Amino acid sequence: MTDAPSYLFYQTRNPRPFLDRAEGIYMFDEDGRRYIDGSSGAMVSNIGHSNPRVLAKMKAQMNRATFGYRLHFRTHPSEDLAAKTVAMTPEGLDRVFFVSGGSEAVESAVKLARQYALTQGQGKRHKVISRFPSYHGCTFGALDLTGYDPLREPFAPMMEGMPKVAAPVTYLDRDDLSEEARGLKYAEALRTRILELGPETVLAFVMEPVGGASTGALVAPDSYYGRVREVCDEFGVILIYDEVMTGAGRTGKFLAAEHWGITPDIVALSKGFGAGYAPLGAIVARHELVEPVLDAGGFAHGFTYAGNPLACAAGLAVLEEIEEQDLIGNAARMGEVLMSELRQLMAEYDFIGHVRGKGLLTAFELVSDRATMTPLDPGLNAYDRLVNLAYERGLILYSRRTRGGTAGDHFLLAPPLIITEAQIAEMMAILRDGLDAFAGETGLRQEVAS
Image (cartoon, rainbow, N blue to C red; front, side):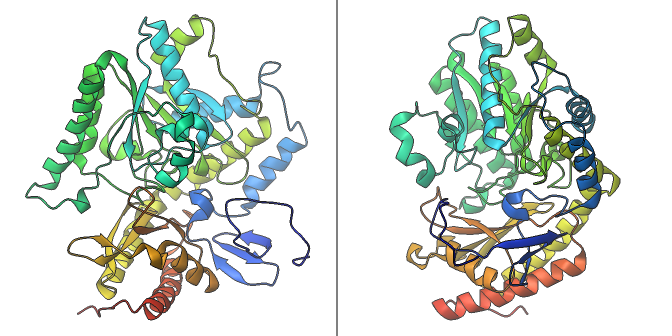
């Protein structure tokens, strides 16, 4: 079977074994090798694999109906999931629109913002500011918001080129400011950019509250979040939180926004929202944005599988598991354990320059000089090589290049929210083995913690 020709293609020629089964935090190939899913796939499998209660609820829905087009029927799974989602999000976010993935969610958020502006006679508002680096999806609209050069640059001539501001990478700053002052500095840069563009032309600001693939679990200083909300309010700019990766409990709150008491105007959800059991995403918005759009003739947007009853039944079962098993609480508790382990790892390997994250969305970054945070030589391809060394040893990591996609190496550790302290220890032992092998191959130094 494994020798048969393949007609599939994805990003690269990087052969992997066939998946046989997955249970909890573990995955098994057809040869019986076990892997720890240290990244929840692409930060998706929040409740772990093959949860029998979720599968049973999906099967019950399959026995009733697997598809019902939203213009022809309402369905109880979609209505129930919408109600559950609103109940779990901050007050004020009370309208839900379903999609099938993260890129669709971001596109939907921007389209809702634009159509709302039109209902308010603000047709000049069309510019959506995002951050660099950032990642918001691979469809053209989402890609134009993305600040990651290898993905965006080939298609740049085909896009308008939405404006950017610097992501709050304060760990790279070498100045005399406090973290609070640095956070305010990055937030004020947004205000400056709005004024440069003309406030009457700026529609929205979209941000990841905790960084995803492009910045590796980047957390801004606390001062940043509230000031960004104030700046958006000052100019009537719609604040969109891309919580595709951070939502559904990943950071120790249902939404990462809750860590700072922020209520965005629109939130994009996916990944852990369906937890890999079905393609599912959503935007959750304030009714003050939605109702004028519906009154003006309706939301001119939609996808065939929006509100699919099987996907929504899966999503509802996932949220019930998150709530009933206290997986948000476990993410917070195990996140502290994991971060402590990462700090210890940094003490052991002097080419680990920084560790960061929130809950069970964490990352470490490799450097050639910790004092200056100078990246490793790009020719080492560390972001790819360490992933393969860990994979060979039975640990799945997720990596990207930190500095806009062209340099730097960070690795995301984001295991399923069901993980235990013992399993974290198991994961870290494999990671150390991989780091030792990487250090041996490259001649990089190691230091022993005192």
